Image 1: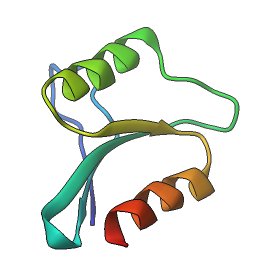
Image 2 (image 1 turned 135 degrees about the horizontal axis):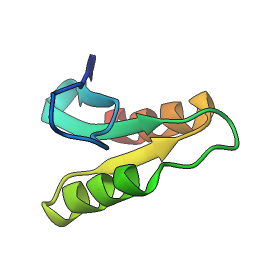
Image 3 (image 1 turned 180 degrees about the horizontal axis):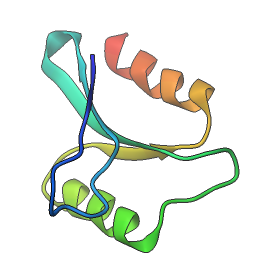
Image 4 (image 1 turned 120 degrees about the horizontal axis):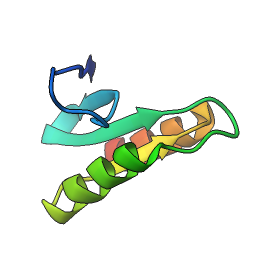
Length: 73
């Protein structure tokens, strides 16, 4: 399950909160191929990691599926 995040007032928040079997979750920011997160998006991902959450950015569907597989296996 990938829940779209779009709360007002939180610029740079990742696109999705991904919920997986076994109580696993992570945040995901999706970019077009070759693009990188904007500075405010990088800061938000960094802050989430400092708080102990897993947070990633992806520009490739295959990379996203590799991370999902790592949690599910």
